[in-house]
Amino acid sequence: MVTRRHLLTGLSAAALMPRAGLAEEVTDLEWRDLLPEGTSWVPQVIQEFIDHQSPPTSSRQPASSGVRTDWNGQIVRLPGFILPIEHRGTGVTAFILVPYVGACVHVPPPPANQLVFVTTNEPYESTGLFEPVRVTGMFGVSSMSTQLADIGYALSADRIDPFEL
Image (cartoon, rainbow, N blue to C red; front, side, top):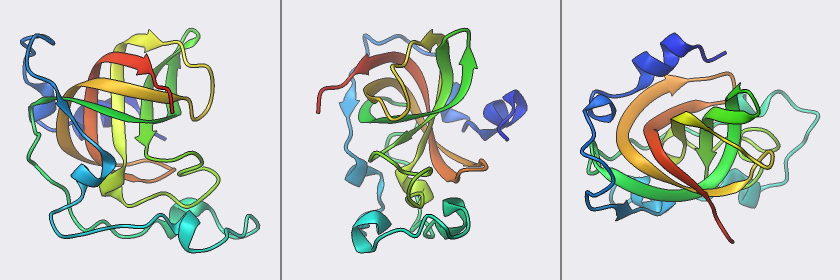
């Protein structure tokens, strides 16, 4: 289980740097941008059908090929789907941003370099599990582990917007 202590210690130093605000240039990222140069990854859900009677999907997370540090400490915007971790009232305050619906719950998680742990001071009123969103905020490399998966990146959200597919 992820605790507040894990959240704080899991964030990289770059993600904790003071913000100058969203007036800074925002870099739009895609999931393939988080993979090291020259590597690719195909979701296991595409590679095979999943036996839901088998052990937890977290045990079948593929190894990460590494992370990229290109955007450490920068303001980025990344679309994805919410996998809630913590709530305050009716809003989500911490979640895993995943690249496709079902990741980490219904199918094995993608490698750590395809998962982003997102925290926000203002709870986001999510409409439910795997809601499509676009998250903007301070990005950094982070190495953390949850019951669902190992995660390679962290994003301290300044803005979370619904995302149309």
